[in-house]
Amino acid sequence: NIANPVEGLLKQKLKPQITGQLLFNGEETYDLARKVWNGMIDRKPAVIVRCLNSSDVSHAINFARNHHLTLAVRGGGHSLPGYAVCEGGMVIDLSAMNKVTVDTASKTASAEGGALWSDFDKATQDQGLATTGGTVSHTGIGGLTLGGGQGWLHNGYGFTCDNLISAEVVLANGELVVANKDQNPDLFWAIRGGGGNFGVVTTFEYQLHNIGPLVLGGMILYPMEQAKKALQFYREFSMSAPDQLGMLSGLFTTPDGIPVIALAPAWFGDISDGQNVLQPLREFGEPLADLIDIIPYVQLQTMFDAAVPHGMHRYLKMGYLPALDDDAIDYILEYVSNKKSPYSIVLFNSIKGVATKRAPADTAFVHRNPQWHFDILSQWSDPQDTAQNVQWTRDFWQKIEPFTKGTGTNFLDADDGERIKTAYGENYARLSLIKTKYDPDNLFNINNNIKPSS
Ligand code: FAD
Image (tube, rainbow, N blue to C red; front, side, top):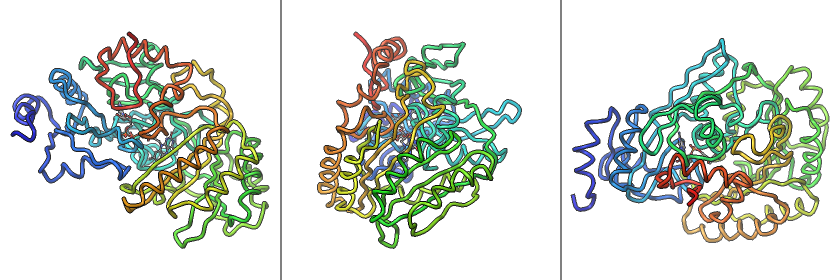
């Protein structure tokens, strides 16, 4: 096969070794399997290896390494730059490895590396348990955990990586190892924030928390005329509330075309205490709608899913705001008022409490200050609109970047190459040494890459 010179070799050598599937261009499932969340990405790998277990992953890694194939690893496929898929080369696709098992006695969950948060939440919520996970349920646990991981629960229970107890990792040499505080502690440190640079994680083990099946949460919507006051209120309220409160804010256009600002709280604690805590919020301003209620946690976890569906074209800029200055608010409102697509969203998430109690060097994830996550997510469906949406986002970002301090690897886009080192911050040098030990030839490089030290 001239179009795909490795196809024959893969069928002859790799296929008999694995229990999963090899997918090639021209086959029915291939085109679906190469699609990722960001519709801007259109890459054709030479092969997609849909693995079913660690042994499949190990054989696939050995083949890619021995034959010098570019290697991408797919968890949930949500990374903005489309790191889950490569042009030519091999994709190790973990999407069929999505089993989650819960041990109620130890309050822990063991999840395969390709699980999504929807898989995880369903299994853990059957027991009223949860850990800090993404706020969109079709995001992968893999990339999110390895890049730190924030959500509704980080103020009360730390970032996702803080709740990781142990992991099984297939290394660049094909060996399966355990990483936890006793075994390979350097690797365990590195995978809590250092991304997919060190190997393929086939199992993540998490600490769970008893949050119950119901939470007090949702959102309150205000018209844009009240947006400045609402953001000023959010600034004070989100940072002074108890740590059992997770709180986001978003600027978006409703499906019926009304631009709004949402203040979105979720209370993890006694419901009547939560009613008291949320009272000032519910009395603030003149909302268009108060959608706060006692809801299942899984409903909270899927509340934003429809706003960010698979396949649209995307471009994102993100940074941490140590303060939420009035000047920054003014710029944000100015740019939002002339956004180029009704689907584009601006998002804030307040970070405080347990997530900020660890030292920056405790885990590879370095961002431990009380602050706000801020991002501009441009979304549009017609490829012809790409240039104007990207330009709008860049202009907007140029105004806001001076107010930010650092960024997180989970929220970098394809043109953020220079910001990768900033995102790892003061932990970069140590990460680079650990990379040299576990992946000296940089086999795992389709990611926010950490270079082996020379
Ligand atoms: P993928 O693109 O599959 O993987 C991302 C990177 O991780 C790739 O380099 C991949 O090779 C590597 N990887 C994935 N799984 C493994 C594994 N098992 N072993 C080794 N390497 C692996 N982040 C948050 O922290 N909180 C949020 O609430 C949040 N919400 C989001 C909502 C949306 C709609 C989107 C698009 C992103 C969101 N993110 C959030 C960012 C998200 O954490 C990153 O995009 C992350 O990379 C997604 O992981 P994934 O497994 O889905 O993606």
